[in-house]
Amino acid sequence: MTTNVYVIFGAAVRENGSPSGTLERRTTGAWQFAASQPGVHIFVLSGAVGKYPPSEAQVMQNILMQLGAMPDQLIKDEKSTDTLDTIINTQNLMHTLPAIDNVFVCTSPYHSWRCRLLFQLRGIPAKRARMPGDLKFLGLRKWLFYCFKECVATPWDALLISLRR
Image 1 (cartoon, rainbow, N blue to C red):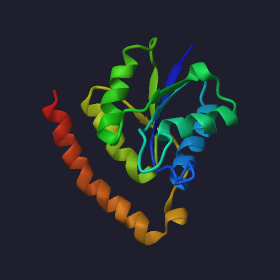
Image 2 (cartoon, helix red, strand yellow; image 1 turned 30 degrees about the vertical axis):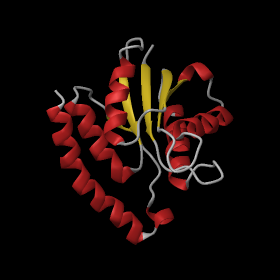
Image 3 (tube, helix red, strand yellow; image 1 turned 90 degrees about the vertical axis):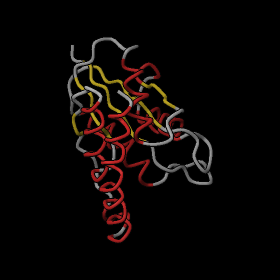
Image 4 (cartoon, rainbow, N blue to C red; image 1 turned 60 degrees about the vertical axis):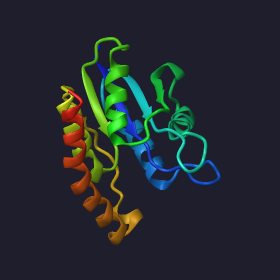
């Protein structure tokens, strides 16, 4: 049987403890994508406590449990505070799992290229999960800002991850 790992990258939690729109889209998008894939599904929920509690990983766990996930499918990474942390912590977690056939990056489309590249630099051939877009929810200006941020962060994170070898 195929074992798939879905790495869901965190996003903000609102002041009342509910998920931001981005966090909810990433989490529900991962669940929907996993439903289209054969095999065993393991979700790595990545995100520490940000500006507001609880942790992003805890909010993701709450969403997935409501959607029907079983507790043994969910692994919380509540230490990661950014993309680079998520890559490294996920790689460390993967050593504790049974044989993995596929690793899927579950994040906003503008963010997925950097995540896949960083996984590949760590020797993990991650694939992009089909995820909902953010443009219509963020608006053009904010979406362009996030795309520009990725252009800056990608080479920086690639350099940092290369130096850690």
